[in-house]
Image (cartoon, rainbow, N blue to C red; front, side, top):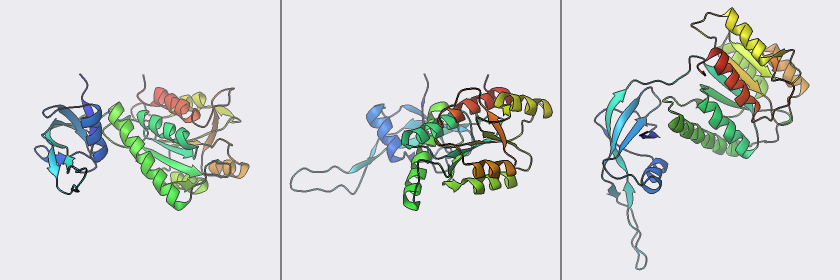
Length: 271
């Protein structure tokens, strides 16, 4: 039987006793209704995973008592951390996704599925034709939300390393950073008018590189309204190669998933 997996943002150590984060504690006790002694799997994002055992809950002082309707003290859900297992489920292909902002659940979907498909970093982008425009406060809220989605996707799919989700950046700045940090990467821009198909570009990369070491890849995907001509020109100036995904125009939430699957099937570990 598959064990429940929980991410803890603090460093874990065999033999220690730690409290589950509130959301995980609620899921384990109220949704799954696990009892003391139940087995869990924990990971802290630093590699590998830990066996763990659910302990008896402990009351935490601080509940308020009134004349009517007593409020019980909150309960800490604690686990005993067991043996560490050096298990990795990361792809050998290091993919960074540069994704222009999409509306609401569409962006959530992209973050979730990109995490399941093994990306190491997700960088949301602001662009001229993005339907979504965020001020600083809204961007901070959305970033925390997307990071939580990435954690949940790792818990579900078995990854022990959570991809980095960055705060939204301007498209030109993100493309320049990609070019500077990865001097010899595979930089791909999804564009319906691309002169080469994505599968062709990937086959060329596979033939031109060593079999044992696939090059890092950066994938740029535009918003619902597409990229403006100056943005396309800026991306190409920074070494991004326009590639098409066939004769059909895919939605902004469909295109990155299709492209990531193609990347992993050709150069990664999707088989």
